[in-house]
Length: 93
Image (cartoon, rainbow, N blue to C red; front, top):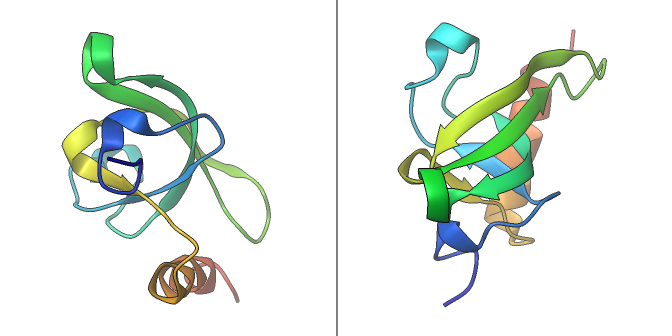
């Protein structure tokens, strides 16, 4: 099993993508890409991640506790590159 199939294996600095709208009240939408800061899945069932505007670098949410079922780790696959590009395009003016 690897981190692309098992979220419990996500590592700091991995990029993750949100799979649902469970964090909309925090300004985070499905399709938003963030960076894992710490993996606490074994102890608390979450990763701590930060989410930034990819154009300005300003924080959208500097500390977010994301449940393991609400994200997946982005890979280098072309389909994931397209998802990351779609996220960046949301913030271009």
